Image (cartoon, rainbow, N blue to C red; front, side):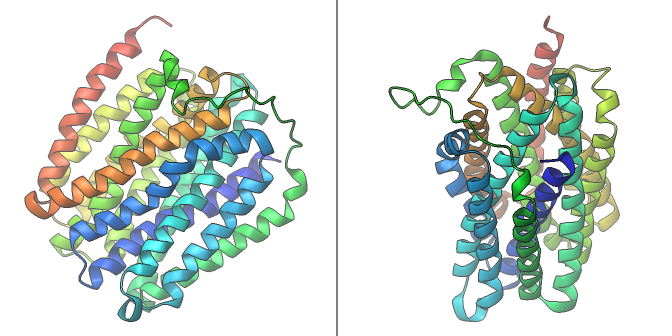
Length: 384
C-alpha cells in the first residue's frame, strides 16, 4: 500500500475522531451538561481503547492489517450515526456516550494499523520523514475537522455535524474497500508458549522512556482539546471561533511537521521532545490570561508548534526500540498508556475545572510540563 493511501486513511479517520470530540462536547454543553459530565464523555473516547489496545496490537501482529482496518471503519460509521439519529431531547446524552466508545475504538484500530504499515514499509533511514507525512495528514484533519464542524454547528446544528461525520466515515470505508488489494500479505509470527504479560515491553528501558514521553505529550494534547471548548464557552466566544482556535493549533502542527524532515537531520529525537515539553508549558501558562478569540488562537498556535514536532520522532523511536514482530503490541501499549491518561485526566480536569476553573487547570499543567522538560533535557544531553 502506498504512503499516500495510508495517509489518506489516516486523514479521514482522524477527521472523524477530532470532530466528534469537539461536536460531542459542545452538544452536551449546549444542552446543559456540566463540565464533569463532559469530562466523562471525553473519557469514554479512550476507555474501551485503553482496555483492549494491547490485545488489538497482538491481533494486528497475528492477522495482518485488513481485519483491524475493516473493524475500525465499521465502528466509526456506527458511532457517528448514533447522535445524528437520536436527538438529545429524546435520548439525552446516551447516544453521545455510545458514540464516544465506538469512535474511540474504531480510531484506535485504524491508527495502530496505519502506523504499523508506515513503519513496516519505510527504510529505517527515512522512517522519521515518512512519519512526518502521517503527522502532516493528522494536522490537516485537525484543521479541517474542527473548523468545518464549528461552522456546521452554527448554521445547521449539532446533529447535522454528526450526519456529516457519518458521510466521512462511509467515504473512509469505501476508500479502504477500493485499495484493499494493496495491503501487504501477512506471515504470522510463531505463537509464544504462554501469554506474555501486558506490560512486559516496559522492561526495555529505551522503549519505556519513549512511552513516558508519549503519555506526557498526550496529556497536553488532550487538555487543549477538552478544556479549550470549556474555556471558550466560559469567556463567551462562539462555536465557530472555538473551531478556529482549534484550527490554529492544527495549522501550527502542520507547519512544524512540514519542516520536520529537515529538522530531524539537525536535532536528535530527545532534543525535539525537550522543545515540545517546554513550548507546551509556555502555551498553557499564557492561556489563563487569554479571554478573547485572537489571544486564544495565538496560544493554541504556540502549543501546536511544540506538540506537532513530537509525533514523528516518537513513532520513529518506538519502531527502532521495539523487538521484531512486536511492533503492533508496542503500539497497543502506547495506546494503553495514552488512553489511561485520556480516561483519567478528563475526569480530573473536569472536576478541577468545575471547582477551580479552567485557568488553574492550565497553570497546573504548565508546572507539570516544566518538570518533565527538565527531565527530558537530561536525556537529550546523554550520550547516544
